Length: 128
Image (tube, rainbow, N blue to C red):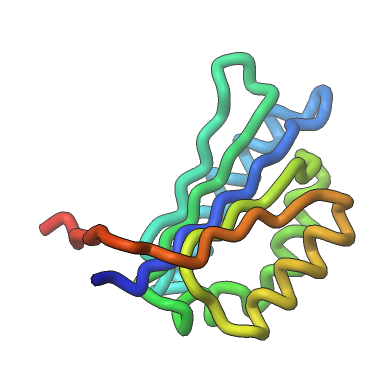
């Protein structure tokens, strides 16, 4: 069984900000990759209209997710120049600290945090 954590943020692209968002993500992804080596995946997906952005994050375990959350407030503040949060989804069992951080972020954005803590079966491959 895996202890993997998946976190998805759903966002609305602000009017006139799509090009800025693309540049922000293109510059930020390599920095995040270098700064957060235990983050297995950071995958931002835009819809066909360029109006909705979902960001899928994958972590090997709760400890890796905790490490990723360090500095997340600053990263999120910068991202909100380009998008507005519509909701969060959390898959897996995380630390109390992480849950508190996400609950606070959801409350501040006025959105819901959906939590799916139980993984009754499954696997995670490393791709090699």
